[in-house]
Amino acid sequence: EIFGPVLSVYVYPENDYKKVLTLIDNTSPYALTGAIFAQDKAVVAEAAKALRNAAGNYYVNDKSTGSIVAQQPFGGARASGTNDKPGGPHYVLRWTSPQVVKETHVPLTDWKYPYMG
Image (cartoon, rainbow, N blue to C red; front, top):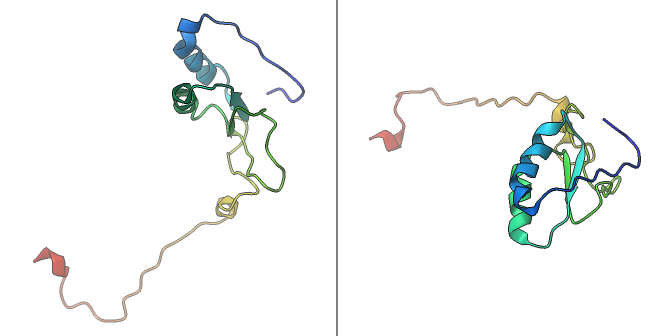
């Protein structure tokens, strides 16, 4: 995992686009951030589906350092972290162990539910 101002450029034939999406998804065990730039909405959707697990924070038509501190959840996936998204509403769940408890206060008289007939 490289931290710093690094720009990776990979020139490929246009008809190899789908192969390149697979290459991106399978090349690295790290998945901190990633970005794509495209005007075609179908290309954006296809890339988002193919790269679903390739970046903890995924940007479309924005720089991959676009996370706004204290306003946008941020966290890497794969070997880049646990994808916890500190700053997001669900982060507290990372440090908890939710449990559901149902208590019935009326003794059961039958094992059937009304909809069971």
